[in-house]
Amino acid sequence: MEEGKKAKKWAARVWTREALLLTSLAALGIMFGVTQTAVSFYRGKQTDLANMWFQRGDAALNANRPKQAIEDLRNALSYAPDDPKFQLRLAQALAADNRIDAAEAYLFDLWNSQPGSGEINFELAQLEARKGNPDAARYFDNAIYGVWDKDAPERRLQTRLALFHYWLSHGNVGKAQAELLALAAETPAVDFQRRTQIGQLQLASGDPRQALDQFRQALRVNQRYVPALSGAGAAEVKIGESRRGTPALGSAPRLAPQRRPARRRGAGEDAVSSRGSRVRAATYSSR
Image 1: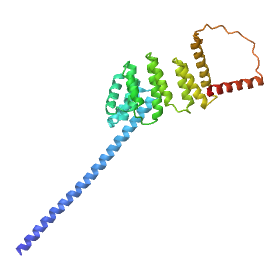
Image 2 (image 1 turned 90 degrees about the horizontal axis):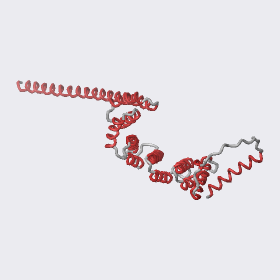
Image 3 (image 1 turned 60 degrees about the vertical axis):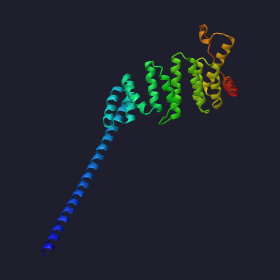
Image 4 (image 1 turned 120 degrees about the vertical axis):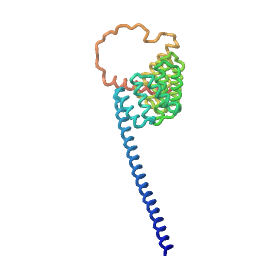
């Protein structure tokens, strides 16, 4: 009897311990679940607040209000301090507010973690160019061959144009013209507007032969594109002047225009003029 009572007491104690253990584990499980839910809710709220402040800062910067943008973007970073998109936008806002050193600090931190980013290198290039730092050219090159998140071909073309203007502003016409040649090589054949733009820049930088080639390529795609027609005519004038050794038209003395009585152009003359434009376009595009 005594042994039976002892066995029952022992079994009761064991059951009580197991019940307590199971109850404790269940309570811990519930607490863990509640904690995870609370953490997830908190993180979600942090993300929402970060995005809200970022959108405000982005809109302020687009509206040319850099001071307000800086404040909003710093609020965004207080909720998401390691977000590179937020950091880059803040650097752009600081640069727009002429706080060059602060912008540079953010950009160099970003560059150290993403040296191949086209956008970061482009921002650094612009900043270093403003400071007169010759490293600007290196960052422009990095941006041209870097990785872009979107619109990569267009962004590379725009970066080459920026590098062209950089070299031209520093008096290095040879390197500026080399960038235009590279830009022409990367431009699709059907993009007659871009080819005309390149031709205009080549003409302005003293390379009329290359300019004429670009205008002719543009006219092969669109024979009636007036900027390419006028550009081709101007390029041929420049080439003719260099052959003859005559001064540019802009340096020749200008005579006062003589007034002539206005007269109406007849329908036949309009037709002749229109045909003349088409003939000139066909002539340029066929060369």
